[in-house]
Length: 310
Image (spheres, rainbow, N blue to C red):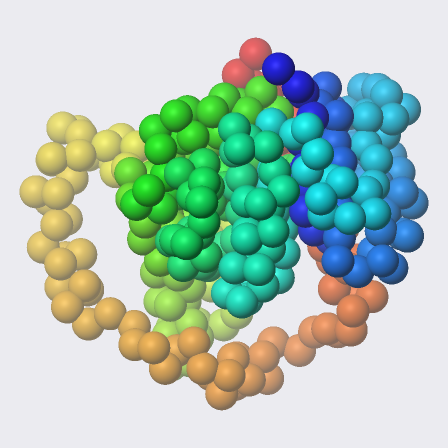
């Protein structure tokens, strides 16, 4: 079996995937619709691999880079591959066009996964001849530092496709989470959206400052969540475990659930009001510098957690 994969879309997410697959020994063929992105790709990948080496997340930089090459066309990129990771724009029309081309050009036994964070696969694979080999493989940004990837099947995605995708993601060091059926937002964004909705409501009502709200997560809930999920958290937060927790606190949470945050909390107007209370330099260069600091801290956290598990 070939150990060649295709990365379709060579932006930030595509570069992360390229590094992960190549680090694991796969040969990687990369294509992007924008020639300028491909022209910069080599330098961008070298910079990313240098960062991974500095963070002790990559040992053999030169061999990793040697396994990655760009392709002039989509068809060239998918030639002879066993797996495709698509990272195109979050637009349904673009996804439909890309997957029609991928289904026609990719070997029929290859798995095709989309990195989409919001569009379920049934919306862009229904008419494909080989639709059973398509699924969503939704990563968390940046994938080379945050390992979870959500596997969301369309109604026609085969069990074999899910098994093969899980095996591939396991091999490259990610943490695949299998869903049994489609739900908008998958798992991660539904959870993130529930927390974000309540956060935006509290900020919009002036109940707490941005600094105070972020500290509640960063210095409170987030410390536990780096070690365990919310279900294990409540299982450990009552003497008798999860059922005891529900007995003690279920009524309180049920009351909160009767008045959830409404859709208005996600409005631009509410965001503008919150931003006005939290002055920041939001120029692109400053945002990039803050992202770099975030990534350095994430890498350090991953190393620490890995050392605790070894």
